[in-house]
Amino acid sequence: MCGIVGYIGHRQAAEVILHGLSQVEYRGYDSAGMAVSDGRGMRIIKDVGKLRDIHAKHNFLSLEGGIGLGHTRWSTHGPPCERNAHPHYDCSKKVAVVHNGIIENSRALKAELEKKGHKFTSDTDTEIVAHLIEEELKGKKSSSDSILSAVRSSISRLEGAYALGILVSGEPRLFLARRHAPLIIGKGKKEEMFFASDMAALLGYTRDFVLLNEGDLAALDAKGMQIWSADGSPAVRSPLHVDWTPQMAQKMGHDYFMLKEILEQPLTLAAAVSADVADGVKLLAGAKRPAVVACGTSYYAGLVLQYLLHRQKRTASAYLGSEYASWHTGAEDVVVAISQSGETADTLSAVRLAKKEGAKVLAITNVVGSTLSREADATLYISVGPEVGVVATKTFTGQLAVIYKLAYSLSSNKKGLEELAAMPSQVQQMLDEVHEPVHHLAKLMSKRKNFFFISRGIGWPCALEAALKLKEITYLHAEAYAAGELKHGPISMLEDKVPVIAIAPSGALAPKMESNMRECHARGASIIVLSDDKTILSEGEHSLAMPKVSEDFVPLFYILPLQLLAYYMTIELGRDPDQPRNLAKSVTVE
Ligand code: G6P
Image (cartoon, rainbow, N blue to C red; front, side, top):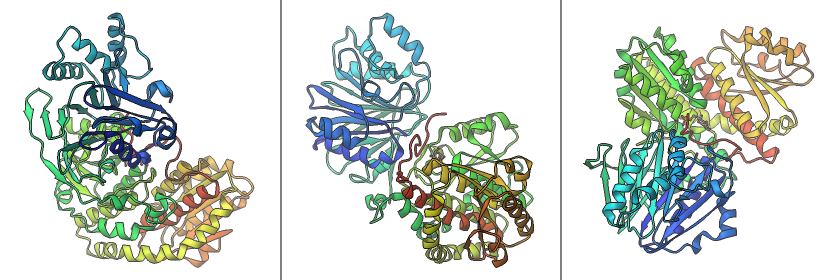
């Protein structure tokens, strides 16, 4: 969701910030802005719309100076418009603030500040931070010490979640603070420092980072940083070097990141299957009541883990992060939290609740240094490189690969591990075979308005994910059902030519799947079948031949053509698959 970038050093801050923000555009936003200081005065440009349009209209690069911060906003408090865009400022326009998260006591603070005469210009919760600092500075001689103490005491009054960047006119330092929202510091090579909500924003400048802890406050100047922990004591945070390169976040000749990320899955799977899962095995081996928590696509990967653990007679329940609080029993001893970003607020709050009740947490994520990885007792990285398309593709299959490896290592399933190791090349072969037929199918399907996806057993999470992909980027109506459930209600919606996409591999569940497909066909539905079996394929009006794989691997294999289908339908419909409306890459609010 919102992106933050800050810079202090010898370059023009506006240039760095504009580039950094453009690297995190994929997170989704509706307005943007930046504040730059030349050490004496500060200027702000902000507006609603995309960065390039705001730049064309106002020219961000006209903001001169080496100290600055910028923001891309995904609206929570107040509609997208110029006055609600960040940075926000105080009455005197001397304090500029950018913020991700939600300040929960903003109403009370606003009322208090209004009584003291402060005038607010936006509907946001963020603006109160600038006025709080202004209020703290009232009557005090402006000095580095008084500014630091005003920033510190203002932040101590905030409840809720925040990643904050603060720029005070005339002050040669930038301030930042985080609580329940990601914020990292980047170290430049010579006399320059950066900060951002996402490493991807800074990869063009540095791969050396320092991660702030919960509740930390930091001050940056060009030469370095000072950090204080939540209790106000000076703190040192360990540095982190990452291998991600800026090239990994390029389109590499493809029209969209989503297509690049779908097609690179043989490579990313190879990285994911070589994950070291020893820490996960250790945690799960002794677990009596394991649980799985995740959101969105990651939840569907979680359902696959639930399935695999059940097959080993380990009772594990998968919960949506946002629902965990209503369902937990307190008896869960290990919670496996799956999140590509490692920043999803709903998943993190489930993790915190489980930890409070004594559970150990095993994280599965893509992002080194993410909040989830830092709060977990052990982390398994899927290592698929930055995923820029908003919707999850390679991170989903990367999660599945690590999940298979974890489950098979846990049960010493050598055959499964061998099959998993062969997956990347099999996936490559399959992608080569299905690519064109799927492209053709997408042209036909993009004329339809409603879709059903059906499967059984471990194929069901794949149907759920395929329907989610389709609705996320085409904005068409799609529903997924365990095939046996159709007759208990949704079958009433089937009428002439409604596409029912059946994930129907051969095996024990195939005969029942065939009956379900016939039920749909009898109501006039148009069956699109994916299977490795000729007879099953012949049941469909359209069919896609798949290679034969062990039942466990059905979600990993069958999701790929369905990701491609969603992608090409979106292109046919003239929509943007990389930045779908209303969606954000990582959702840091509950
Ligand atoms: C957002 C994204 C989804 C993602 C979900 C969970 O809603 O748009 O694509 O599946 O968050 O994200 P996570 O980072 O926790 O996997």
